[in-house]
Length: 68
Image (cartoon, rainbow, N blue to C red; front, side):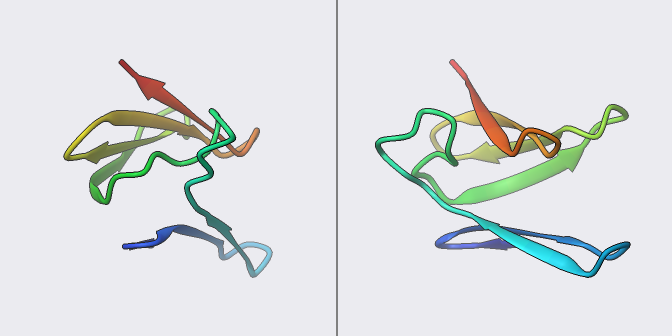
């Protein structure tokens, strides 16, 4: 689920939710822009589109990669 403050992921198999927000001191955190689009690919990565950047989220590592 996307919010203006970040991203909350819920794993229904184990009933756990985790919040991800922007941390300007962490290059692997969620970017500073509002998420406008998202898609899960066949490998389980989440692709997040914003008005300022494209990001790939690796749910296994819990990290974001900004596509320049």
